Every structure is written in C-alpha cells, then in structure tokens.
Image (tube, rainbow, N blue to C red; front, side, top):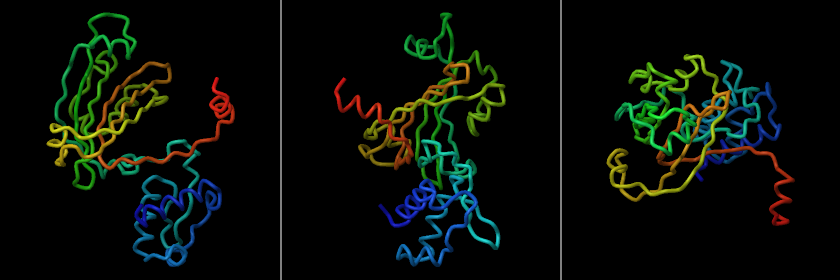
Length: 239
C-alpha cells in the first residue's frame, strides 16, 4: 500500500473510532507530516480522498474539519464513488431496447410476457483513464423517456427525478481477468486482473429498477461493519 493510501485509510479509521469527532479540526499538515514521517505533499494527497468522500471539509484560513455526514454507512467508499461526478466522464457504447430474457423477467419480477428493457453500455473514464465497462438494464415501462443525455450523466439522478425513491443496492463482487474484447475497450492488456461487480438497485416498494454488470480496473472499496455475534456463533457451531 502506498504511503498516501495508508495515511488516508488510517485517518479514516481514526474518524470512525471517534478519535477525530464531527466538528473537530484535524491536525495541521505540518504536524501530520511529522506523525507519519512523510512530506506535506503526501499528506495533502492523502487528505484529498477524505475530502472527496465527504468525511472532512476545508474551512478557508482555518483548516480541515471532520464532517458529520458519514453516518456510519457500512460502505464508506469505493474507487469510483470517491470521485466527484465532474471528475468522471462517460463514453456511451450503445443504448437500445431489448426483450427481457426469462432470466431478466424473473430478476425484475415481470408478470406480463413481452416486457422490454433498456440496455446500455458505457465506459467510465476517470482522470483521462478508462476504468470501467458498465452494462445496465432498466425496465422500459418504468422509464419510457430514457435517452443518451441521461446515460452521459447520473442515471440515479434521473431515476429520482422520475418520482422513484431508491432504497438499497445489492452488490456481488468477483475477481476476474480482462478478456480480449474488454482489453480493447479499456486500452489495457488482455488477462490483467479486474473486479466484476453485479449490482441490483431496489426501490422503496421492493421493486428492482436496475441490474448492472460492471468490469472495473484498479478496484478497491472500504467498509465499516458491525460485528455480528449471532452469525459468528452459527459459524462456530456449524449449524
């Protein structure tokens, strides 16, 4: 782990440990540099991550303060969501309507036959580097007006603008190797390690509104999760 990554993770841990509480000021860059034995530039780079994910904020002329916005969410950040929307570009590969396969009809819990889905694919670009291939499906009956201008921006903003309330996401991760076709899309070598991410978005009424399959380079995520003593006991007892 690089020094700036270790420092940002360590500061984040200390925030969640309440060693730096909401509203409190972090030590100045000079002091942090001495504590961690690095340059002030490295400290500045480490603090960028905390600023990006909203755990701290800068007060002009006063320093950096811990916010109260993390709300102890289990998912603190991943390597894409830590970036601001303005720092992420999307290259749209296609947007089309497709018939729902039996598998997709079951996933979206369609009752009627012949339902159709929007299917789009886009390449996500962060800091001029192609990082992610996203293939997503959404029911046409929920979003009849979907177009490429939406896909180029935040689809989840669009979903909420249509009057839906997003409740949860169910996400599965699996390590994979990049295929030849994926390597061509991401400008990388075939066979390099990547993360496959399968994601279902759920509305507050329980309906699935989105199913995404993502291939992500250089993927990392950080969680803070409570210890589940009951689950631990079940695993220990074997039943």
